[in-house]
Amino acid sequence: MMMDFKVELNSRLELVENRLHELLEPRMPEIIYEAMGYSVFAGGKRLRPILVMAACSACGGDESEALDFACALEMIHTYSLIHDDLPALDNDDYRRGKLTNHKQFGDGIALLAGDGLLTLAFETMLKAAVERGEQRFTRAAETIARLSGSQGMLVGQVVDVVSEGKQIDSSMLDYIHNNKTGGLIKAALIAGGYIGGADEATLSLLEVIGADMGLAFQIKDDILDVTSTTEVLGKPVFSDEKNHKVTYVSMYGMDKAQSDYELLSKRAVDNIICLGDRASFLAEYAKRLINRIK
Amino acid sequence: MMMDFKVELNSRLELVENRLHELLEPRMPEIIYEAMGYSVFAGGKRLRPILVMAACSACGGDESEALDFACALEMIHTYSLIHDDLPALDNDDYRRGKLTNHKQFGDGIALLAGDGLLTLAFETMLKAAVERGEQRFTRAAETIARLSGSQGMLVGQVVDVVSEGKQIDSSMLDYIHNNKTGGLIKAALIAGGYIGGADEATLSLLEVIGADMGLAFQIKDDILDVTSTTEVLGKPVFSDEKNHKVTYVSMYGMDKAQSDYELLSKRAVDNIICLGDRASFLAEYAKRLINRIK
Image (cartoon, rainbow over all chains, first blue to last red; front, side):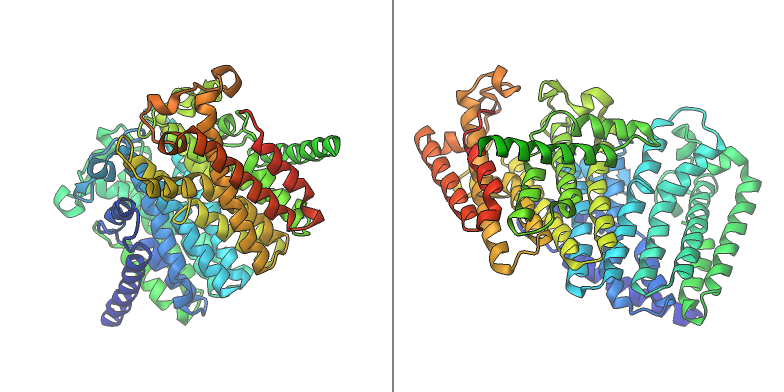
């Protein structure tokens, strides 16, 4: 099982990597493709693309049909990182051990590289939806748009920005986590479900799984920020404390963070198992996310 | 005819205005809807939305089906203005006689308001495409994505930014105009055509019309910048010269700018007339654009 899983994971990672290289192949004007590629190929885990593919096959679909949507979600994730790092927001100099996009290319090109990735994500999905000519692809794109925007990542980010340095209550922290981190994780699973031909009940279950996984992922991030090392994480630890950032750990304490994290992760895996044998890769992937150390 | 035209134009403007207010209705988190609305309702001409609607009926379609796509295009146009004005790019303090978005709301919220408008544009189009369940809506959204991005506005803007302060040749200036200004004008006409059920030949003609109108519109902007007054334009004149910006007028001289402008405008109107009686509003609208004074 363990060997099979790694083979399966690597084969998906390779598909995503190759397709991202095709979609971002340098062309005129080269500087913007260079800047977009710089951040897309900076060593992300490809969590969201893998979830799109795995959810598609968990619902009995053909993963090759989900590949462009998987890559689009990674572009949207990357655009949000580039814009978050800009001086207008977090003003960060490093990400994943490399200079941030604007430190490498200047603020103007970084701004446009983010805009370019967001637009290219929709170009990619809509081209696929037009070529394949079926509504399930349009539905997948609609889900990704909504959960990247007014019902997900963007509004979570806005609330995070305006509450910076302020005392926030637990419902506000929930809102930020559920939208800012949870938005794209839910989007990945539901979009994969649509492409895989899931029925309404399955789509609802995928949304619940996504919400649990999104929050679990965020809690783990907050835990690692205070328990890991800079060497393992590839980014500074104790950064949340330094930035006076309210986290799941600072709000609820380490014990509750740890137990909630385990509860959410277990529930997500149990719900994935309800999807049947076809979901075994997704279940194993979710289990391994639980034990991630970075 | 003149009276009818104004009635027809105003009725479309009212539809667009009302729908934009619905789509941007304040909700949680309020600050981002306030910031997005601030720039969307800052007094634009609604050129692109009117072109979407007019192209749709010129092809025999039902304009009410095009309304959400018309509004989406205005959101994309507005996002590009907000991001262009940021310190990372033009660093402008005023637009249309009002403080720019970042001067009013700060750089971080302005950045997110631009991101929010771009995302909301796709949410709006994709929701409409899912609800209506026909491929012509997905095709319209795909056209708008492509011509806002890698084959239009975004790449035009990138080349404009990187060539700032440099000597550029006429092919480079053409590239910038055809993409940066022309992208969304072509998108408006082609998307309206798709929704109106246009055949391939008509869609190709709409693209040609869009390219001519886009360039004519840009040349007129460049002409007005040196022949109008700040009072009439609502923005400083001679701004291109001050910003050392190469324009159609500085590249080719005023005489050629004026005659090319007239040629392009006439050709666009002649081609619109080829679409038949249903295109009379679009033809009249294009004629009046020719004589615009701001």
